[in-house]
Length: 168
Image 1 (tube, one colour):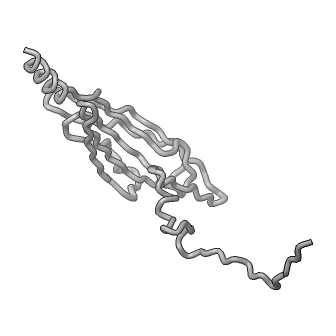
Image 2 (cartoon, rainbow, N blue to C red; image 1 turned 90 degrees about the vertical axis):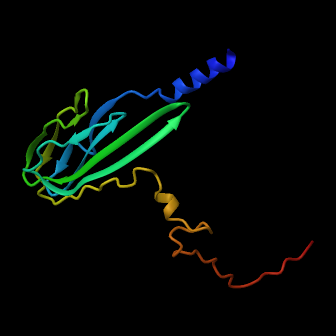
């Protein structure tokens, strides 16, 4: 009886799924004209078809870029799909992006609408993108001996003269 109970409990824990979610993110909500921003849709624990909003009036530099991950931790599985776009605005003003949808057999999920403000850029300011979202910058710029980039090596200063020490 105890073994049967443990077997059923184990099988049920494998089928426990995380919470379903569909969200939209941007890397900045205000952009200088001439700079790009990243638009990302994250779908968690939903098996369906992603339908992007109409982005035809925007200049898409890159996308749709997709990434998918699946993890099982303590009997709970989580499946995440991310669809991202890099967009370059051409005019100053507000950009309103309609919701994206994810269509499953049973229902339709929708993200929230989002807006980005594009500001004139008379000084030609370039906003830096944070491409290092995983924190590996220091890791990849080091060699096994501890110098940064492996190219810069600090030399010890040359000693011009040796002194003899006398004991008193």
